[in-house]
Structure formats: C-alpha cells, structure tokens
Length: 582
Image 1 (cartoon, helix red, strand yellow):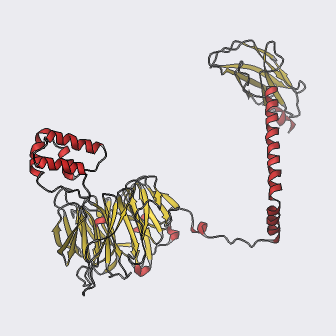
Image 2 (image 1 turned 90 degrees about the vertical axis):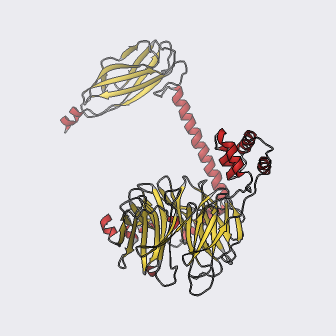
Image 3 (image 1 turned 45 degrees about the vertical axis):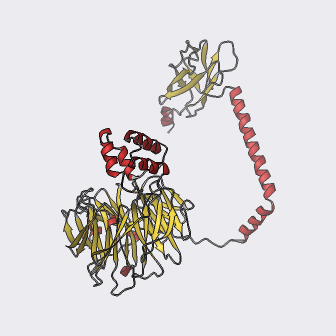
C-alpha cells in the first residue's frame, strides 16, 4: 500500500498555512465549553516567546475569542469542576507558577502554586540589604557562594547575580523592600477523575512542577490534596483511574527515566524505567506505555516496566498523541516526524502515513464542531490544518509496512506431553546428581585431551607460528598453478620487536612417488624484524592418476634437530591429468 492510498483515509477539512499559531500538543484541547454540542478548539498560543501570548478559541474554523496570557503557557486542559446544569467544562491554563481557570470564556479563578522554602542565609542577606547594613558587592559574593554550594536561590537573587557591577546598587534599592519569595513553575498538566468515571464527572488537576514535585488539586476548593516528590523534573504525565478509588500516574522526567506512581505513593523512585535517550513524547494506551526518544526510536513498555519492543524511525520525533475513536473502538498512536509525516501505529504495526505541508508540532484528535473523528494539527511554521477521518476507513494490522507478520505473534499449539517425555523427566529428576557428575567427568576429559594435543603440537612444532620466545617466527605458504607443475611460495616473517634471526633452513617432507621438488633445500638469510621474506620453488607432479597428498614445510635452525615451525600444505589435483583421464 502506497502513501497516497494511506492518506485517502482522511478528508481535508481546513487548510491555513499562515494562521500564525505557535503552540505544542500540550497546549491544544477540544471541549464543549458552551454545552450546546458544538465542540470548540482551545489553543494556548506562545506568541513570540516573550510577549503576545494568548488563549484562542476557535468555533469551526473561525476565531471566536482570545484572551491575553501573562507568561508562557505550558499546558491546557478542560475539566468539570462542579455538578451544575448545564454541564459546561472549565478551561485550565498553566502559565508560570499560576493556573488560570476560565468558565464560560471568562476568567474565573487564579490558583498559585505553594511557595517554596527560602534559604535562611539568603533571607538574612536581603534583610541586611533592606536596612543598608551590607554592601552590594559583599551581597553578590555571599549569594555567589551559596549558589556554588548547590543552594537553590530565589529569582531575585539569580537576576542579581547576572547584573553588571554598575547595575547592582539600583537593582538592590528597587527590590530590597519587596517580600522575598521562591516560586516554582509548572512543567506539565493533566486531569484525574475524582470519584466517577463518567465523561462529565468532576476531575482533579494533576500538576508537574520544576521543583520535582507532583500536585493533585481539589477542583472545588483548589487546595492541594496530594503531593508526590520525584527524583527529577517531570515533563510528560499520563493519568488514569479515580482519585477516591485507585489511580496511577506515569511520569516522564528530564533525567531520562519514567516513574509510575500509585495511590498512596509519596515518592516515585520505586517503579522506574530507564531510557537510552531523552524522551520527546509519552502516551499510555490501556496498560501499555509508548515513549518516543531523541535517538529516533519508538519504544513500548508494559505497565510493570518490561520492554516489549522498539521501532527505529526514519526521522526524529516532534510530538505524539493518542487517537481514541470511540464509534469504531479504535485506539492508535500518532507520531509526528520531522520529515513532514505523521505515522499511525496500532501496537507495533504501521497502519497509516499522513503527509503534511510542514513539520507538525501540535496534535489533537477528538470531536471538533459536530464531527467525532477530527484531527487538528499545528505546524512549526504557524499553520493550522484540520482533517476528518472517513467513516469507511479501515486500519488493519496486515497493512503494516514494518515489523514481522501477525502470524509470528500467534501462539503455537504445543502438543500434549507423551508418556516417553514424562518418563524421561522422572528419570532426570531421580538421577540428577549422577547425570551431573557424568557430565562433569566427560567435560574434564575433553579439556584434558585438548590440552594434551596442544602440548604435543607445541613439542613437535606443528604450528605455523613459533612458540619459542628466542625464535619468534611466522610461516605462511601459497600454491599457484593448475599442474602438472606448481609454484610454491613460502613467506617467513620475524615477529620480534628488535632481535634479528639467522641460520635458518627451509626444507620439505613429501612423497617422492607423487612429487618432485626442484629446490628441496633453501637457506634463508638473516630475517630483520617486521619484514616479510618470500622463498619460491617449483613442484612437478609425477602421478597421472589424479592423486594428491599433503606436503610439509619445515623451518629448521642450524644445530637443532626439532623444527622451529611446521606448515602443512594440501596439494591440489592436477587439472591436466584430470582432463586426460576423463
């Protein structure tokens, strides 16, 4: 199936490459904010990154309203915070240390994260500066010492340390009378159903912060219900379950680990998945955790942390999102790549490829307007694209472009145990000690015979490499020709680092009824270390019946009866003789 055939499963509903939307998947959501059955698209626009941040609401393809945001948004979710009729959800926007709650498109409440404890020495230093009892340069040196010791400082102190010497005193005079605070910021945001699993049930907010903590907030009083400390800063969070019954949080952190938190957990170091690369996206489908990493791989883990499979992708991952289409009971994973593609995976099988006009940075699937299967995409260039899933579209695992066939995952019908198998099993259980001793004895005998043969080979010099440290030589031989005359080339090399070798003789052992050597005795000159020396002789085959034999090459030292090294050459059959016989 080609990519164009795959793309035909979607209808192009809206196309605006110059919408000037700069956002990510975490800042997109779909909600029926007016309880009229017409679902709206809520986007937290990052603007330029320093100003012009806005919360935009789209009705169909038209901008319905927009609200200014003070700081960069890090997450947007919709949730139900009461049981009033009509059932209108609230919008929560995480920005800096605050969560802005909107109800009926109007500001409703602002929640501030609990302040963090301040270093006592830092507080005393600013208190002295407030009463002009300390010099600004001494203040800077003292704060720098605290930072060098690994102490966490307030934003005021960090900004103070970044200033030039001429700007220290004006900054201190401007801020010394203001109350000193150390505030964290929000890194990720999600929702958790409180006591019922209904679609419009009351939900709690789950907040991940820069101070390595997870907060679960009460949706009515906006107080902290539960706090969980993590070993690292959370960046992605996935939630399922009910807060009053049982729930599980899967948190991906900046240290490249994934932690699983259950109800009653106070820290997230017990259940841990260590990744080979930093995560760029994480989704949870049923009891399976999908993680996209910076090394261009898509990895799958069970809820207990067991690695199930890994897929190598053609390009780097930009974002991920779960496609949950209830009318068809379809749950797949959408993976956006930097090569202008969105890949859809069902388990580990690739079932669809969507070509896009730009690099997708934001994905959201759900009901938009009155259409259930709508895919909203935002690109790095600021474009907004909307596609609708065809009702006739089919996603089958056999359409996979990668991975083994489905039959490989099917269980094989294992036959029943025969009486012979059962008897053999009982015999092994009853005689386990004797069988083990027999195996060990045979293994020792094998090692002993191997060692004896090796020593015999060393004693007889039946080795192309010398074992004598005083004569370190290496021998190799090569036969050329098709017969009846062959050319034999013997190569000798001195493997010593600095010691030359001399008084060497090369001779041969062969069957004189089969072969005749023109030069049976070769005197080798002094061998310089590191150089390769070649010696040649010709061999005539005397047999006309196509018989061949081995020829042994001996390298001897004058005054010694045992060869230094020995080479065995397997002579080829003479081709001319073989043709004549045929």
